[in-house]
Image (cartoon, rainbow, N blue to C red; front, side, top):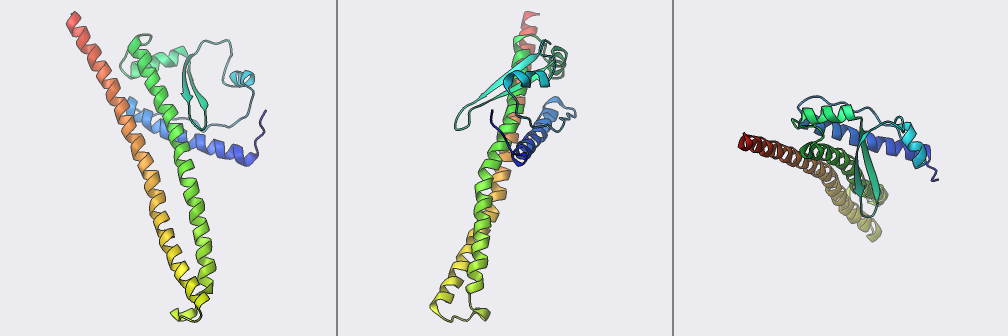
Length: 216
């Protein structure tokens, strides 16, 4: 079994914490009421042992499984007790156990799973830029210290160092703009996805209502 350091587990826990915050915000907007998700813990366990840590392995549960494909294949499993699954369906205005009720629960699973994946994607996208920014700042300090004092142009090496330091400053300013822009772009894209899911559920409820009126 793969062993992780305490720092790696802390990083996984922080990732899950960010995803939980995003998921709770999305579910609150969707359900129209406050939703709190507890701060998660990060453990590395065999699959057989992992089942026992989240509850009675013999208890009945409603599960939503999401597959993650690509460079980092994974699985996301969201579990509800039957009572909680029925409550979630009722809060969404659909009947539990029906096709539309199952669809609503799957949309909740999509929201929660996407929240964690968006958090992972944001960190993975911004981390190289942050590393590059640190490298550029370090190079600014190195070349800036070689520049002649008072802006005088002494020898060629000093003039070269001064020109490189100016170029690196421009690169640093570009990264300072790009990193927040990337983070906010992913945030707003996630919000748009939440609105789309809410609209899909509302459309399903509306279609169900029209179908009931037609039958009446």
